[in-house]
Length: 277
Image (cartoon, rainbow, N blue to C red):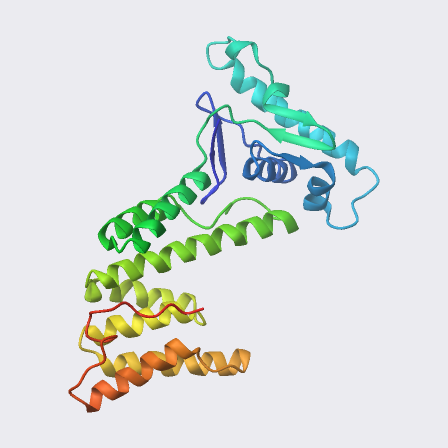
């Protein structure tokens, strides 16, 4: 069973799609797929579908959804040739466990697991100062994304938490890939991408810091200072906070370099920007 959640939701078995079109069974399968190999409590599934106060009929309705999912899985197990795969049924892959249900993938692929594996490999390369390897591996990890996580699934509280976790992991990988590219001197190549990213993430300090650095190293110190002022205005207006110390230090370094021929090592390309917490 192959699972994709980094974009539209897809579950394939024997080459057949087993994701239902009805919204609530689709939610159930999505939550089970994100926890493949682990039991998901019945209570968690009910909360996902109906919130903190499920109706009295929730257990029976959930059992109906499970039966529908098992039917879809069973049809895929039979396959196009009409032969049941290894004698298995839907119950063998969507298993009833004490207090809940568990989806077994049978060794199939999961795009979110592959993303995590490649991201961790990229982070290790960054730690070892293998910036080319880090940029390449993190780029491969990010290429697995085809859009927002579970873009075509209605999300309740649990799926919402899972999708936000995945999106945060995506942003962390993106941040590290950009930092690796900065360390490789790819300043001008990064400018179009960072222009879009800081608009999309208007209060993300690390992305703004990277944009400032890329602009300065591309000979656009004035634009870098303007980026700082926009960030500061947004943070003060929305949160009542000043930019963090690393971002302020970068701004002061750019100001100093604009009036002093002695440049800060942070700005001349010898070091990467300090991480922004």
